[in-house]
Length: 196
Image 1: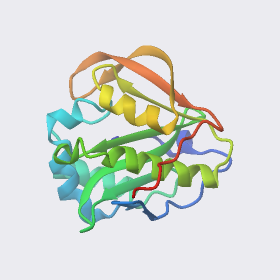
Image 2: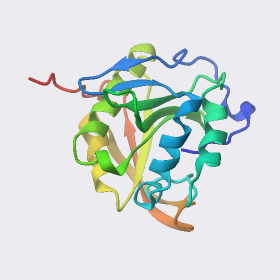
Image 3: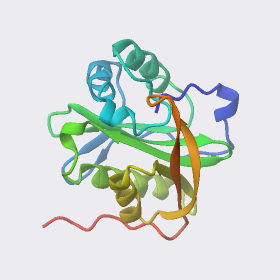
Image 4: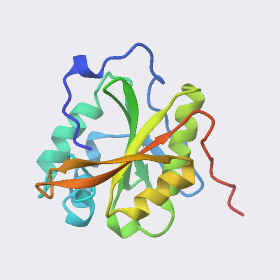
């Protein structure tokens, strides 16, 4: 998720507006703050997390997090880069919609301690639902490394479909890795069911 794109590459005609704060069933999604640097560094310095992301180096330290936050916390682009927080406002992950190559792309990650609890499915569906309220009829692209089937399930639950396979360079692994490409077509989004 370490996006270092030139401003000209990121411009597009019309976007969703400023990133909102979104209340989900168990989580709050909010714009990032510079104070999130320590939590981000702890999460992304875990190779189990960084190896599943294309653009995150390993090791990953506080300076990496601070540099990234200086871009996203003050960025004037229309990208949404939201912190995933638990009830105590502690940063536990990220979900983002980025304008790249003339298309919207979904990316996300979660601190390993929170895996297996349905948090990422909740965050992706909440963020995607709000994004599509602001950008109806928008197609969203995403993908996962082929050895990250849990992440593929997160996308499939939200309505994403597999569109192909490729190889993508993973900075943390220092290698080309098989990649499953996905797409959410307009009208295919599946919001979360209310928790009882």
